[in-house]
Image (tube, rainbow, N blue to C red):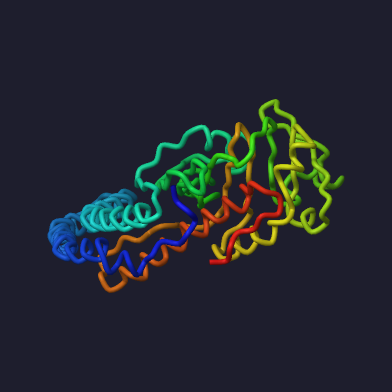
Length: 322
C-alpha cells in the first residue's frame, strides 16, 4: 500500500532506474540513426515523384498527393523515435510506480468510471478519444486508478473539417473512505444555469433520467467556487465538506489546470481535472532524464493528492504540504 509520499527521485536515479537508463544509450542512438536513414532515403525516393507531379498535368491532385507523401515519409521516419521514447517513458513511470507500491501501464482500457464521467457531465461531448498512462493500486488504504484522457470534437465540414481538443487531463477513481448510497456531483459554480442563464442557477439537473437536486451549503466561500448536486441532501453534506476547497484550488493552479469536478457514486469518488499532457518522461536526450523523472513524480503526487483532498475520511482533515 502506498502512502502519498512523493517518489524518491534521487534514490531512483542513483539506483536501479539510473542504471537502466544508462543501458538505454545504444537503443537511443540506434533509434536516431534509423530515423535519419528512413528520412534520407525516403526523401530521395519522394523528390522525383513530387517533381513529376508538379510538372505534370495532375491539377488539384498535386497538393493532396504531395502532402500525403511528405506526411508518410515523416511518420515512417519518426516511428523508431516514437518507439524508443515510449520504451523510456514506460521504464521511468514503472520505476516511479514501484517505488510508491503501485503499478503503471501505458495502455488503458477505460471502464465504468469513464462511463460515469460521460453520463454526469464530468467530460464534454466528443468524437474521438484516446487514453494512456494508467497508474493503479492502493493509496492510503483505498483502491486507486488514474489515467490520462484526450477527447477531441469534430468541427467544420469539407476541407475545413478539423478535430479540436475539448478535454485533456486526468480521470481518477478511488474507493471512498466511508460507506454511502447516494449520488453526489461536485461541479464548478455556474456550470448548470437555468434556461439561457436568465434565471440563475437551476434547482435540479437530470442525467439520463437521474435527477440530482441542488445542495445548499453552509460555507459561503464554498458556494462561490463549487456547486453540489445530489439525490440525498443529508448524505451529500457529510460527503462533501467545504474545508478543502482552498486545497483543491491550489492543486488546480499548480497544474495550470481548470475545472476540477467530482462524482461520488457506487462507493467511489471519480475526479476529472483538465491538466494538459502528463507523464511524458520519455526522450532521446539523456541529459534531461533526471528532470523528466522529477516532473513525472511531481505530476503523479499532485494528482493523487487532489483525489485524496476530495476523498477525506474525516471532516476537516487536510493533507500535508510536501
